[in-house]
Structures are given as structure tokens and as C-alpha cells.
Image (cartoon, rainbow, N blue to C red):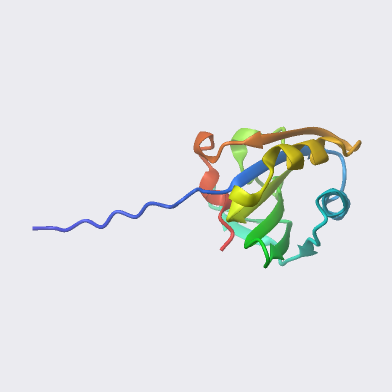
Length: 138
């Protein structure tokens, strides 16, 4: 008799999509200012895509110790692929992990929409993204 172990990943995080024509450091500068956080450049996020290419995506991180939140900004466009291929019109993702129940999603969305250089900003539901595994950075 075989015993099969099932493993379920919890996709309990907030995702905000951003389209703009800015470099990653400028996007993070604006996000830092409107959300009052300090995103810091991390090593590029490496992931092996289905096309057998390993690709790199620019990644910035901020840890909020008080609220137990992690903010990550990742570029959707790598050298050869899209991180989330079903969102080719999106340039960056802001992913918030942790106890995000303390986060005012409407306030964040409104603050991001107020940035004049951000062409399009919206909140995404992880359950609607087939490539959501690519947004797990740990």
C-alpha cells in the first residue's frame, strides 16, 4: 500500500500590478515615498522557466518588523521570459506577504494610482494566476 503525501502551498499574499515605463530603481523610489517603506535591491530572483532557460528578474525587498510584513517588488520582464506570462502587459509586481490583514488595500491601491508615472495599477488575485508559484520568493 502506497501512502501519498500532498503538499499545498498557501498563496496568502497581496499582489499589486504596475505598468509604467520607468526603470526598477525609479519604481521603487516612488513606492518607497507613497508607502513610507525602504525597498532595498536584492540579488536578482533566479527561476528556471518551462522553456528550460533560467531567467533573472530584478527584485527589491523591505521587511516591516512591527507589522510582520514583507514587501517585494519584482520586475515581470526577464532576459528571455515573463515571470507571470499571463500578465505580459504588467511591468512590475508589488507582493505583500505576512499578516496583511493589517494592510489597508484600498489605501495602497490609491497611493500607487496617485503616482503620475504609473500608467496602470490594479490588485490581482493569486488564485486567478496560473503562474502564481513564480511569486514565491523564499
